[in-house]
Length: 463
Image (cartoon, rainbow, N blue to C red):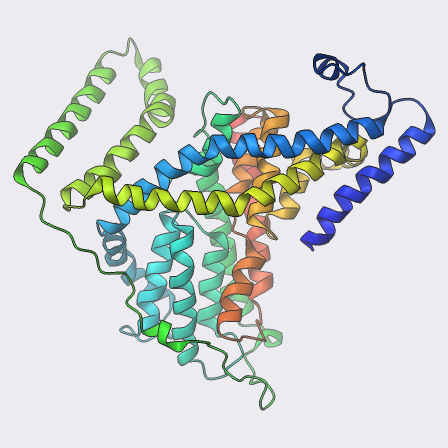
């Protein structure tokens, strides 16, 4: 489907520009005469000229955006690696295990699937997308070992994937924040709470739908025809791998702990002095409700992640370097997506086609509180994470990071997961051919996440 979407953008842009030029007059969406003059171009002579300029500018903007993103990604992936090697995942495991035992009563308490699911969900909550996938695949393999109907999704699989499709992340959406920062946002992390609200609603609806739909006769688990449910686990030796790679951690020295405590006391003292220095109650509320979240939150998060590593005796600098190297691989993977999507969208907009679609849909979507400019993002989010990220970046740069459209599209980026990718990877890992009610449950969660994002943004940002 993404192939068709990209082809429609490119081919539709050229066709629309040709029609508009044939009609005479300029009806393209972006007639940037001043911008063209600044580049030594004597004004737009045709829509096709604007489409040509859009293709080249879109590709160039993608690379410039990627350069701005790499630094932030290296920093944050390094910090997350420090927290992971310090054993933060194991702390979350102990907190989540009792809850998951109630959510998955069909799974034996000591079964390896339970531990793998806890590790997967913990990694997702910390925003460790790359680390979460191997744990999720292992969880599916272990769940399939107790599957009475091989090739048919079990209720536990359905619930597990419904939770994954919502992908609730407690950490700040740093990737989106870096896009907003690069675009000149005054408050890059202002979308954190609305994003949590949206993804929380998506989680509730997806889980509820999975639990309700599994009871319908049309989604009952029935064995496949003989020979159709052969297991395709691939290399089952991977299922016996440890849940977390062993790490060598030396005890932290008393001096390191003393320094960490001193820094913590200094932060608490500084926060107390800031509160005491507020002139009135309104200023105190402003500090707690806005400044603390937008100005203090990121430094406090960095302190917490690195401080946890120091307290656990992790060689924080060396580990952070190793984690930061992963950012280069991430940048390499997303670069083609950014270039292709941004170039296609720039061409489509320059031709006037996108403006015509927005004008046609705007009365309906605006009445529902959804600007038509965010519709491409909504359509791409379940299909392609990188494609949706590129569309979000392009929209933020076009309409402004702190505009209502920019805020909404940034919130939509974190409201759900790339549903079709998750289902293809996890179900394919165990050869499930009958997914039963998984897809409708996940899509209902996606829709609920969109609604939650719109409602949250209207509450927090107006619009």
